[in-house]
Each structure stands twice: as structure tokens, then as C-alpha cells.
Length: 202
Length: 380
Image (cartoon, rainbow over all chains, first blue to last red; front, side, top):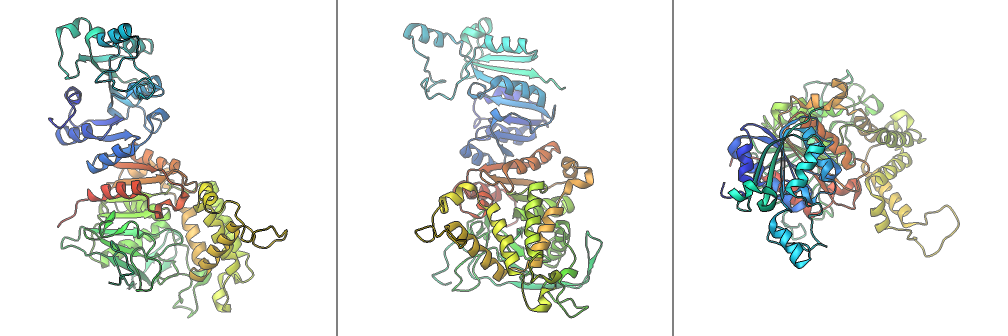
């Protein structure tokens, strides 16, 4: 697992061996490659960037080049055990539509995103009066891919309003350690939010 | 090797011919008693015979997929960009087999060949051949060459349809299907273009109901128009615009019906050179094979159900400006494969070259194709 991005470790723990997995915005295919080798999963990555797509092919990961914002109409209801989307929610044009699609296609869905409610962001904005720039959100407001940032509270409210059932939650720091402050005040101290949602098959 | 022949080419190649005297039963119910197949091979079959790749050609191509026929040859085979040492279909690793299909006019038995029963050219008596029939003779060809299972079957357009059909028809005899710029079946518009092409040929005064060989003529103007029409559908609006725009052959308008625009001149040239190398009856036969292709038909249109018994892994690719077989058509195949839970990768490449893009060098396309092919396992 040392090769794998640290934040993916916990997701791997959530996934049952032998599952069928769809990884949205799968990047260079590392997660799928690891899951294929270690958990005997089958599935596909969806990715738009040509460089990432090429990496997936080199890793022998099934890759479908497509734009997530165009929807997941190419997949049947409940056709995957897990639909995963790590660190891509905030970069989508229509995140609400993609979330709805995920719970349609997956029996379980896993979503991770950077928590914009983190105290550091709040302090940055209130003290400097400027959009927060940090290690996790390094881009400037005008060239960031992160066009739909949200907080832990925002996300949970969205789930409630859209009857999306949260079955697991993990609020961690960038090194994916948990702490007592994060447990007490997740929206203030959590750096990364991981959620597992139940599917909503029609 | 001549200095004229570029590096990374398979170099000089020569076609071979195999005779088949076992009758081939066709989809139409008819039978071909005996036939010849002309083919080329590149690379070497390994001891385990697990490194063979079958190349399937499209409408107007033939067995000459790579390399040069002689030192003075100005043009290499049609898929030279993809076949050769260090290329996606790497002839240092793979043994490549590239036949001309049954019904063709470049050495394999077809309408222009002599019918042993009459001593005359078959002409219209040559039976209609389907994609499934081609896969059947290709399986017999594999057998003769000592290949029990293809490492991959690859093709673009109509060639991609054959690769797909291979995975369906002989699931145990193919490990990878490479389907590029193809479609699960023709649309009404595709069939319409083919119908116009056939009408052009069949209404030529020299057609003689397909028996023009007996009169020592060819329906050249009909075939030319058919090819001109086809050629328009292979190019994108942008590619034609970039290449010709509204350029005139001479500097001024003549206000008559001669060839004035560069694009007219180009299409005529394409049409004429096609007439010199292609047979009109073969063109009719190949467009019919395209029209009839619909593997989902036997499952009432459910392609996923057809793919349920497929075991090959698929590589699909499409090109943004291809409107003959657009990316949408490839996605229909991808959708059916994912619904059936089969292994598939699908890529969509930016290209200005329309349907012809699968024959044009493009780094993203070549690199991705190479990456996929390098993961195909073969014995040393």
C-alpha cells in the first residue's frame, strides 16, 4: 500500500474483496490497480485527462475516457457494488447530479472531498479577506479546478435534503489520521471527509 | 534493405496465397465450394503460437497492411503507422496475419475470379458474404497457419466489426478485440450512403447486370461516383475546409460546369485512382456486408446479451470528428460490454481527420494503442 496515495488507504478498507467497482475521476488508476491486485476486484475507471488515461492503460486498468459532467447514463442501475469518487466532487460542473447518478449506479458509493469548513480556511478568509490558498488547495481563485467546494455540514445537509443515506463517515487530516478534535468538531477540524452512501436503486 | 524504406517498417513484404478446397457454408444459405485467400504476414509465430494477431481490413483496403512491395514502392501498406517494429502492433513481439477478405478483388476469390463451373467470371453469381462469413474463413485460415487462438484481432471501421464478430463467434479463440472507429451496426444514414453508392454503380451503362467482365468493360463512372461519395463521408468538414477551403484550380470562375474548385478536382482524382485498383462488384458486396452487420439481431437488439458469452478483452477507440462512425456509436458498444460485465477500455481521441483518423498518425492514439498492446501477454 506504500505506493498508494495515503488517503485511499481507508477507502480500500471499506471495499469487500471480489467486488465490482467503478472509479470516477480515477486519475492514474492507482486505486483500481491496487484493488485489482489485492482485493481481486473487477471494474472500470472513468477519466477525461489523456495523460491519466494513458497511465491507466499502462497499469492494465480498464479505462473509459469520458466526462463525468456528461452523466453516467452509460451505466445501468445498481450495476456496481461500489462507485468511488475521490477528490473530484469539488471539480465537477454539476456535483449534485453526479451524486444522484452515483447512488443510482452503485449499491454503495464512496465520496471524498476536502472540507472547506476547516478552521484554517475560515481564519485565512476572515483575517486576510482573501480566498484560502493552502497545501491542499494550492490554486488561486481564478485558475482553480475546485469550483464547487463544500463543507462537512453542506454535504450532510445535501444528503438529507436529497434522501441520500450515509452509511459510513470518516473525518481525518491530510495524513489520514483521526483525532479527538476532529471527532468532536468535524466541520472545524476535519481536513478530508470520507463518506459511504447507500445506493438508491429504482 | 533499401535506404528508401524507412526505419520501423517491416520492410519488403510479399503476399502469399492459400487454397481452401473445403466448402464454406455462408449466412445466405449458399455455399462456396473452393476459394483462394491472399494474405501477408509480418513478424514470426513463436513456439507456443500464442503471439498471432489478425488484421481485418475495411471497405477499400486489402491484405497489404504494412511494409513495401518493392524498393520503388511509393506507398506502404494501409496501417503502416500501427504495424511494425516498435509500433503498437509490434512485429518484434507479434506475428501479424493480414488477409484480403473473401469477395475481394486483390487475389482472394471474389466476383472477378473465374467460376470453375462456368469458366467465366462469377460477377453477380458470386454470393453475398457477411461479416460472420469472413470470420468463418478467417478461422480456417488460422487453423492452416497453426494458430489456435489469436492474441488479438484488430481492425478499424468494417475491420473493427470483424474483430467484434470474432469475439462473439469464437469466444475461445481470441484474447483481445481491437475495435477502432467502428459501430455495432449501421444507422439508416450509413445504409443510405451505401445505397446511393450501389445505385451509382448499378446504373452505369457498362454495368451489364454485374457481368461487365464478359464485355471487357468496367462501370468506371459509377464506381468513381460511389468512391467520391464514400470519400466525403471519411473526411470531416474541418479537414476538407483546411485542405481545400474554396480554393480554385485556376484563378478565376469560368461560369461553366467544368472542374473549378480544388475539392472537386481532388474527389475526381480519388475516384479515378480507385477505379484503377478496385472492382465494382466487390464494392457492392462489401457495402452489403456493412449493411447486414448487426450481431445484436439474434438477441432482439440486446447487444449486452450477445456479449455475455464473450471472453475477449476489448480495446475501443473513436475520433472526435468522425461522423461516419461517431464516438457515440463506439459508446453503444462500450455500454453493452459494461452491462455484460466484460473487460473494456475506451478512448476518444481529438482529431481533425474524420473517419480516416484511424489511418493517420497521432501521438495520443499511437501511444495509447501501444500501451494497451504491450500488456497483451505472449510467450517469449
